[in-house]
Image (cartoon, protein in one colour):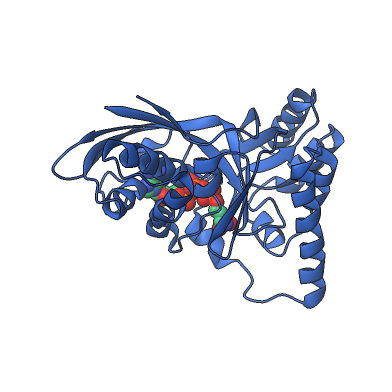
Length: 292
Ligand SMILES: Nc1ncnc2c1ncn2[C@@H]1O[C@H](COP(=O)(O)OP(=O)(O)O)[C@@H](O)[C@H]1O
Ligand SMILES: N[C@@H](CCOP(=O)(O)O)C(=O)O
């Protein structure tokens, strides 16, 4: 039996819809695989009651098909589904790494990106790779033109998850089909600033580069208490706050030493609105790790 720890991820980062992503140190899914004549799946852990074990409906089933690697796959969820923390992608990336090894398929991590993205198509209708790329490669990733660029970034992060669910499929319904050129120009400016900030591990540039975006303002409306929690985090010293993936998690970029106060401020702000939440004090981290 092979075991893989596959991390949560945060996609978009405000200005990089369907393009930018980061791997997070925690939380993570644990995937265990063993050869079998046909694919079967068991799911335990956080939110497992909402995750189908039918291989046709689970992201790992699509990955097993794509690698022609039938297996019994055990998924222990650490990343809550429909959270905006790449839950479906963590399992898909973990399964891709584990099955590639189990069947000696010889695919590189980069080659596994489109394979893991097939799992995302099962749940959101589109094979967006902005979660599976960092889940496989770690660090900060840019998915563009079918290629992935990886930057070995390192920054303190708080991910604050309110007690609500937003399905990526639903949140894609509010994505504008077109945008005024002024908004596109502004977004390109922010995205460029963010990418340079990542190469320098500069929380100020990264935070500034997360501002605005064409998609984020539409999604904020789906998250009760977003505005208050964002303000509280910025007041506590976060350098930037945006929606993580499709939400409802809020992603706050921090400076060394201020994660605890940022996390506390966000929890208090949600609490004042009567919304329960939990905060992960985490960091940009490594990709899926294989344990023999
Ligand atoms: N292995 C899996 N892990 C998590 N969710 C899964 C998995 N397989 C299928 N799903 C389904 O995917 C949906 C959650 O994915 P999504 O809406 O993209 O949110 P996120 O990936 O941010 O948690 C849920 O409907 C869940 O049942
Ligand atoms: N680019 C996608 C990212 C979805 O991330 P998730 O963590 O919410 O699954 C989108 O914004 O739709």
